[in-house]
Image (cartoon, rainbow, N blue to C red; front, side):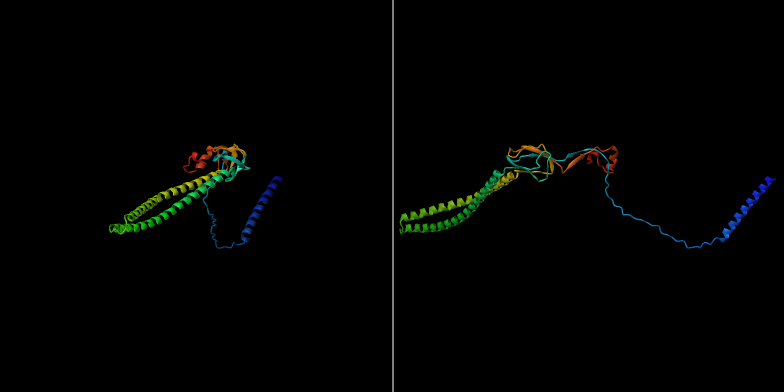
Length: 287
């Protein structure tokens, strides 16, 4: 009997809970506030823009290689002489800057040679001026001689008539004739001398050109007494000391450029396609 009582109690409780749920649902449905209808707002989508620029991007990968200089120069004596100066950087492993005086040879003899060449050039120039003055004097002398010859030829013609008339002696006629002949020789001499002037002028001008070249050569030899670094570099195989007399062409070291270096590295096979891209560059063309 007690079992049936518990069963009915459970059934009554279940029905009670169901009724309570239904009543709660009905209450909430009829008591909830009404929804206010608002017009639908249309929002435009937001766009963010960015300016793109085309540029080269570095391609990076790790590799190991060796560096070597792209340029080297032998330091050689260009004119014979005694070393009177060596740069403090002219030592084994020393760094010499572009244009720095590395070595200086005794310049006294070369200065004297330059002065001598300049003096010779001035002398040749004076000789040309002398020839030009000679030409001017010859023209004046020739003009005067021709005038005198014309006058004396007229005098000779008059004497010739006077001899026929026996108004002058034969000796007087011979004297004027001899004078005319001498003046003719004088005119001829002036003409010959004047004809030689162009040749003398050409010769003197050639001498001046030769003297000018000698001056330039002396200047070059003097300039070569100073040996300057052709580029910034490191000195190897250093030789020579101050006071040592050296002949032309003697090597005093080797300058290795630090301005331009070559880096030789193995390129991984996996990076070759990236380095080449779409270009037609070959592997041998890669820096």
